[in-house]
Amino acid sequence: MKRQKRDRSERAHSQGYKAGLSGKHKDACPYQNLETRMNWLGGWREANQDRSLGLFK
Image (cartoon, rainbow, N blue to C red; front, top):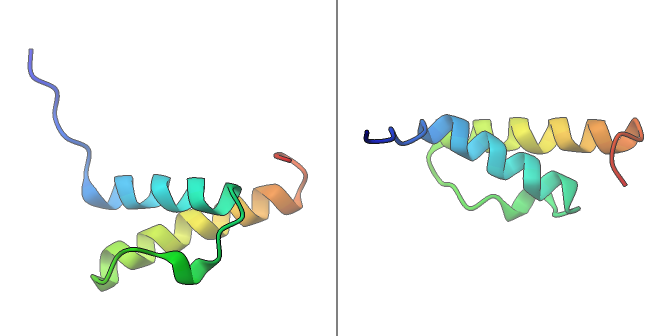
């Protein structure tokens, strides 16, 4: 059975989350498309909030 590729926006969000957890700056976003960039930044913001709450080191 073939696996479906994940949605680009979902993928951008998860990559942004990973970047936020690793401490990268938000200017490190690799996307130029506005919608995809906003999803990446959303993930980045979530990760920073989780780090500030002490959920991750």
